[in-house]
Length: 421
Image (cartoon, rainbow, N blue to C red):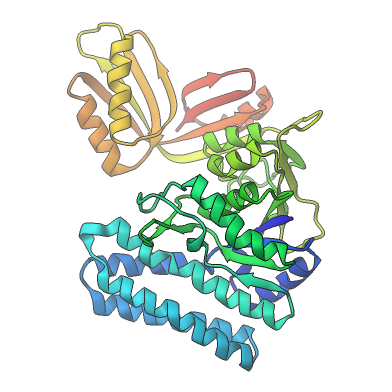
């Protein structure tokens, strides 16, 4: 059994959906398919959340009507009259749920309101896709994943109750698969024991696919994207990139840690723990081989893997009395970063100073400076970038840093990190 995951780009238009049909029909049956919201729908729903939480309910409802109309027009273009009529009726249930969530939204419970509204996107997209697949004769059942994934009430970044969710996955989805039918469901969302909708945070749809694979003992997971596979650098920033044919889970986690927009570590964990390979393939050309991510890659020879994090701030805290930075100082400084929930992208300390490179979040950086200035003299460099190269060579490092001012550099056997202006 396989798990497929499709993101918003793969279903952005009705023509894109039609082009996916061969992928469904050629998949080893049965298959679990996890799908995101239509492209840009989440952004539109986030605008509705913001508007509703400001108390502008009429404006939020107007935005909701526009979103609903866009989905109906999408469905009408994709489906024949019979299936459009059925889809329209099914969608109306979730349009009503959206209106209830808007009416209940408030700034005092913003994160809760966010999840009740934003979760609608995945439900609408998968319903439309489900009716299209039925129209095309693809045997499957649509499942509301909120009936399967039980989470806590950490809204916008909910934690999954694995024991309960695994039981539900086997009771609900396992029975459908056993009957020979495939399953279509949503990524990114779940629900609490009180049936409040939740979202799973960054890369939540990939995470959902990984959880389904682990809980139901899938043979593999395939994430279908609009690129030919996993690349060694962001093609939006670098002209020449190299596709990686095979890569280990360990290497991907390293890439993600340094800021690469690849596969989130929380997605990797259930797959790595259960020795389930993950494929990254191109939905635009399914004949391409793609990339496989797995526990072991024999004779791996990776190209330089490049991560470029822009809009960084380099913060230096120096003791006011020229005393050494000791373990006590470090403990206090780390506690400040932890309290403010600021991730350190690069760290270095010397005799009397501590240096950290962090994402430029103005609200958080200002609070960080205020806290550090109680006991330290603080300097900062704005507008810097953090370059990380795994499997670097002197030539590649030189080429990427030439004509730039290097503020800080760290090297290990496999990785070099450079803060540049």
